[in-house]
Length: 85
Image (tube, rainbow, N blue to C red; front, side, top):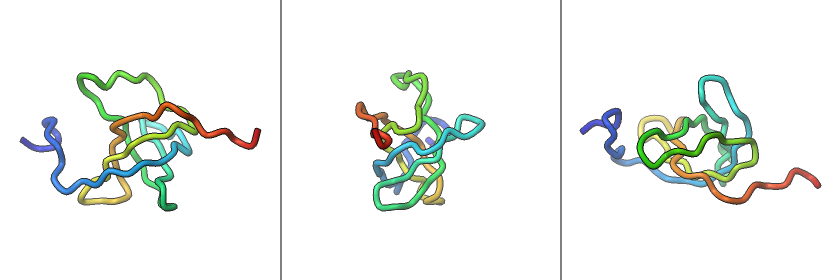
């Protein structure tokens, strides 16, 4: 089964990060722990029913094995970072 058919990608690494920007076409700019920034989309399918991600959300991202600048958001964390308050 290919990844487009719902299978897991072989060799994908999983990292955590923070949503830094909401981009057009259901994409998000995520700053991963360690300083890099990746472009990610939210995972779809059964059990993935969070409605919206906002700037500051902590997320878990599965990076593509072919392109480490792209990924899929597989989980949203509960806590948000505070911005200077």
